[in-house]
Length: 136
Length: 401
Ligand SMILES: Cc1ncc(COP(=O)(O)O)c(C=O)c1O
Picture 1: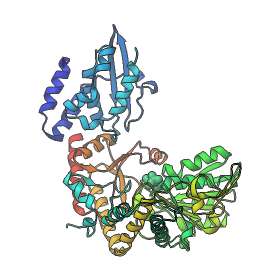
Picture 2 (picture 1 turned 135 degrees about the vertical axis):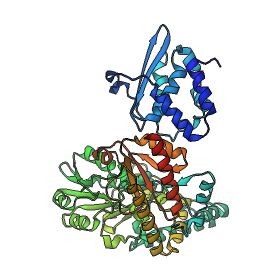
Picture 3 (picture 1 turned 60 degrees about the horizontal axis):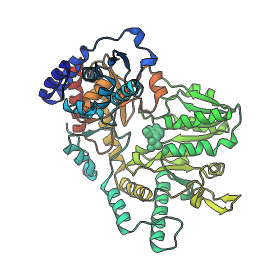
Picture 4 (picture 1 turned 60 degrees about the vertical axis):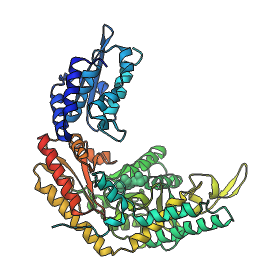
């Protein structure tokens, strides 16, 4: 698997994280790195529903590559969003289609965040991402 | 001081969960099951399953006998005068939907249905949708600051136009007993039918439906240490007689023709299709188990745990408890901390609590919140469970603040 640099870095640090506490700290650190979404983009149209917290996801395509922005009011979810974006950002539509995001989160030791009973919304974000980029 | 639960070992799942490092504090959502129930289910399935009320063969007769014996046990548990006043449904939600459909014919535009501001969606949406179908007014009874229905306001709002009053006995978010007696008495005087959502209330103490004087009382088996997929609807005899049939098929029919049919009275007339037979038999076993416990010690145990829970929450800075919970549970938020973050970190530490709106979105929103964490207790919890929760809470808050 050829990874973007930031994704490689994420994998390295999360693989080494020992225990839930360190993973949580890392998640919060990565959440801080999420570039802010301007107020106009935090609008209803960009809302991802099905989350306990508020989440916004914006997808734009330039030169055949997808670029994403995301925000949330929950800190740990911001971290999960950041980890999603470092993996998915800059890919083409067909690369995105082939991308196994659950495997990515599992590799980070965060696979449980995707269990169907989780209301944190990561599943909803993945579904929304697929919708936004589907067929484009 | 360690407060053990003398009944913990009766619930094998508690030990199993502990082996998986899980502390179960979500019993208001559903309870773990006593061994007595597991034995009854296993007995039923190993000795021969059969459908009820239809077969003349021996397994059918035995299943029907066990099934009807459970109806007697439920009637006794609620002190209903007659087992025929107990209708089995698929849950509290389906019992409340049964009522909203069964009573629809009696209501006309301009009539009012009164519910409280703290209702679970199960006791709000069926009435709300009925109101929309029939052009009725849904009147919302307000709460006081502690989380009780504001009695003074409610007695004003429940008037001659009120045809149905539907209220919870014990709030699943606030842990408050509602002032049922004056509400029910007043509703009766105004000629309104009364529906009590006992989904949480039935789990704590014994309640006498005749003494309450409600027309209908509803609960779910799975919250009362019984199997899931089963609910109970108690109705006063005259009140049951007012219900129109709502689901059709199976043994609920008396005479079926191609164009016309006639239907049985309650309870069978409201139990269309094959009922959850094993669950009904299982609930009977759970009630036998519960009846064998010393009720006073159970109440005292739960009250002591609840005091411990409130003390611990109040001791922690920034914790805001919703309402003034009286028993069983407490919901809270922490200033400056997102619920979702807190829930995430409690989950990481094996604390099984519930986060979110608890199926009472209008209530949670009216408190200016979009969610809260709820800790709920059952008779198998002990003080170690609470200590583990508190230490997980402290760790989580330390990380988040
Ligand atoms: C107060 C209250 N009413 C009704 C229900 C609905 O119960 P069920 O989902 O078992 O139908 C619940 C369960 O969460 C509840 O707490």
